[in-house]
Image 1 (cartoon, rainbow, N blue to C red):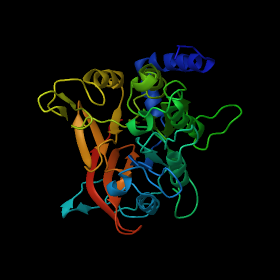
Image 2: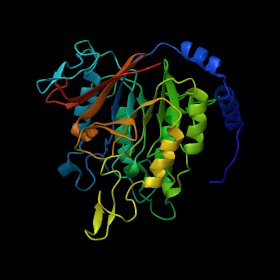
Image 3: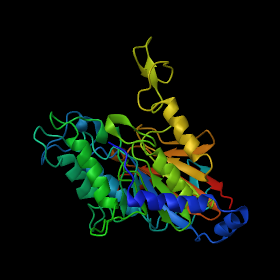
Image 4: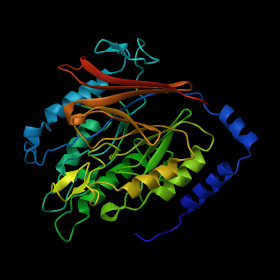
Length: 372
């Protein structure tokens, strides 16, 4: 895609320059004037909507548990979280959560970290709206009733959404369909009001950002800096976004599909003839250089958490390069993260759906104090 400069890009650049050149005294003033923050939201990943017809799934989906029944169970868990108590103990051990024992507030939104669909939206030989994308939208767009998410939904794409080529000459048809879905859900224009509008949308990379109180949130799709399958590198946009909206030191939370876990960072192992954490060959998903470039872009900012998906069965809370990183189990397995960010602390609880909508099983917890 050729580079171009739009009026919107020029306005964003001007805004970023104004913030990045604030004198130290003005920066302190900006911190004092930040909106108060007490935000609760949900994160999930790897829905893998799998329908290819009204009643048929892609091969292996039923065996893997990627069914509409599993998706409905996940939706029930998402809708049932508000009002439950933040866990004081998990497995007989104190969680250390600052919110322990208090009720979970109604989430401001549900953020997805990629792989909304199993097969590029649900491809068929003749280009048309993919059945898997229809299934995802029927469950995971905000709506009423037990079969729809009750909160605003912030969508994100992963490799299963973006890697599949359509039948020639329509190789990019389903990638474009998924990217259009993201844009139509989140980018408002003079003539169009998006269902879940965001503050800053990059039409080239489909990265976007928004703010809840004094918290800045950024969706990076597959990963920040992705150029796979014709994707446009979003790091220049991210650099400008953070300079414009987070130069005052406010906390920032990032969402993307790939993480820093062993599966996300595996390389080809010529001896074992497979991808694994010990390989010295080419990266499977994203490279060491791509991770370094993203971290360099984040270096000056107050990034308090990164949420990702991709690996399915293992709940994770870990730290890499000074960043706290979180991953619940896959949504088709019932997984979600409950997050609360205030001016003084951040709480994260990983959970999964139990046998009923009221039966939420908390598995891991994390809490930290926030400064400034």
